[in-house]
Image (cartoon, rainbow, N blue to C red):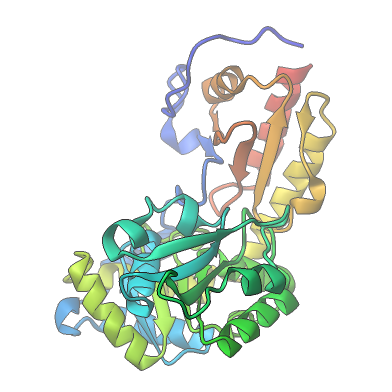
Length: 358
């Protein structure tokens, strides 16, 4: 094994002055740059004041996302966190409860906003190795009609979970049971389009019985920012009020709307390229002694690798000094393939890992 450099890694470009355009950035699929075609669409966008409902590009984007997901209406948000939060605030009153997987983004990575800002109790369910929960767990978590308990109001699901596809039969069963018990269902579909492309199913099929869906356009689709919340017309009217309360109302946001329209036309089917490249990368890494990863979990564009010995700082620093950035999530490192990573970047990354572990 080669001698590892010591020191900490701050997330900036490597110390050898590597140009930003030459970086291979696996930290997230949110780091993508708009393509030339997307930039042209943004430059030529028709715009208006969206708070007044007068931005034609954003209105059209919302209509197209609603149609894509089989919903009545949709609303654009600056971030997925705000989209999810507005969804929960629109479904639940203070003192009511949302039931959610303990590894889901809404529960782990959104600063507990639903509880802090909305007074919504969060009831976590333990997810399995694939990020799933069961109907039996849901049944056990729903509270009785008792003043000692919060009112169970909402089930929150996620697809994909850490890049892993969620079984559609299980999602349908969970949704059906939740509705039978009087609960609504929200889907954090940040990477729902990855799930649809990987399974060769329509996005609408994946969420056909789900009441609200948050779809992120800055993950995999190449937008600089933005998520779209979809549901019934009445739900979106409530969500519009919540967006205003949270400070998410924007003005000439059609610049981003145009980027979203371009992505819906050009960037959905190409997600299959990210999945193929992720598989190639994972299979190559699995052959390197000193790395551990579960190939059965590489179903879309995300993978988790565990270095042995676990010394993230040294590995991160070596890769960064050679123009490759990866994410850190002890004890594993996360790597996400996206539209700015091509076949040559995959080959270069594998070569660097082999150098490090030789």
